[in-house]
Image (tube, rainbow, N blue to C red; front, side):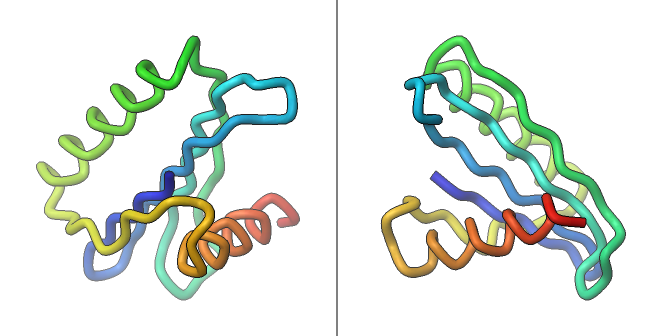
Length: 93
C-alpha cells in the first residue's frame, strides 16, 4: 500500500510492503516538492496491523498540519509501481 500527502510545498509518502523474508516494512519519505531536500526512513513492523496503525497515525498528523491525501494505491497498480520507482530513486541519493 502506498499513500501520499501533499501541502503547497511539501510531501510525505508512506509505503507498506513485505520484504522477501515476509517481514512488514513501513517506509516513509518526506521532503519539499520539486527539490532533493527530504529524507527516507524504514521501520520493521511487528505485523501488518501495526504498520496500518502507524499509517493512520501519520495520516492524522499530516491532516493536522494541513496536508491533503493525494494518492492511496496498492503496489500492483500502475500508479503504485510508479510511486515505488520514485521512492527507490530517493534511496540512491
